[in-house]
Length: 299
Image 1 (tube, rainbow, N blue to C red):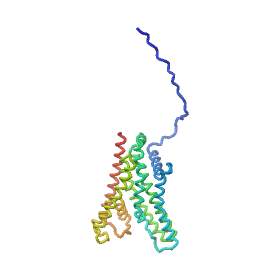
Image 2 (image 1 turned 180 degrees about the horizontal axis):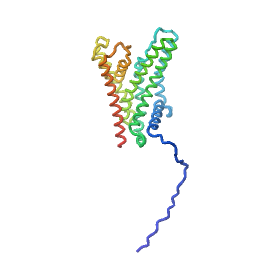
Image 3 (image 1 turned 90 degrees about the horizontal axis):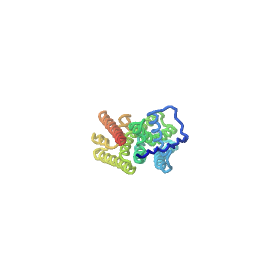
Image 4 (image 1 turned 90 degrees about the vertical axis):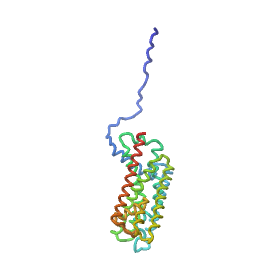
């Protein structure tokens, strides 16, 4: 019987590489969500990222602001009797710019983590998939409100400097911001869901642009066909505005804030239908976004 050879002695060494034990407070899910929200808003404008990432958002912001700066200069220098542009209307004048911003930045916020696999780290404890989804969605809403709110603020300041009625200008500014918020929530919900559906940024950009352009074109065309007297007296023409996020949000803003500067006001029944559809679309998009990350979390 052969003699058993004893195992060699252990020679492992524990190296102190300078890590310090953390004894501070553990802030939990809410603080993590806040940090993720703030970081995502910065990233939506390229802050903290490469210079190339700043070009598109800053350029689109400039496209939104420069026209109102020119308008303000004109209304102050010429001392006009009334503002040439109403804030609530300006938001929808530059719909293509807002759509481009959404298509460019929604994939950056939602698709990037899926593409590089870092979403697995975010969905580890303590944050939950709902925390992640709501933080990203909130960041996109805030980013859109910055894009919309800055030019509206410039218009408001210009109107005050031009000595238009302060109360009227404040009311119009508030109405424009509120309408912009309704639009931002709607667009962020739709764009976020589309962007989260694929890790490929190019596919997400194309899909968002396609959905917004096709829906808006179809809505405008249908409305023009049904609105034979060009006064929006046709009920069918009014309900055709449900087909696009832009027209849906604008009509809802008109109803909620009683802003009849478009020349027509939805009835109470029509307004409630628009409100219900707006809530339904936003709710379904948020639910779908949460379900998407639930699937990712399960692997």
